[in-house]
Amino acid sequence: MTGAGESAAARRLAEASRAATIELHKQGTPEYDQRAHQRAVEAERKAAEAVAAEREAQG
Image (tube, rainbow, N blue to C red; front, side):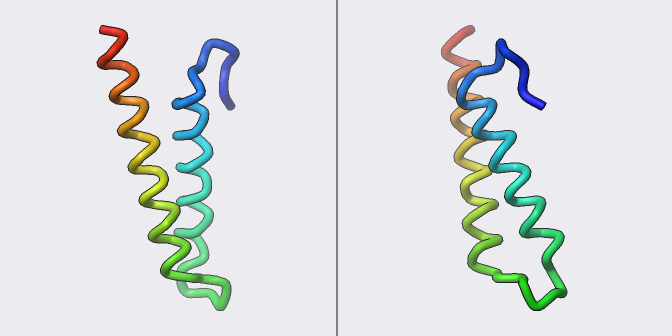
């Protein structure tokens, strides 16, 4: 769960991670869509980069 002091970038990363995990768990089922999984992983990567950049900017 996100805390009150967490940044927007960290919240986006948490949400992107959840979405990627949901898509990952669909593998091997009829609901699995490889493109959706790839988009979720890419969104997670971009969110992680944003968090890293934010932390670097803060020092």
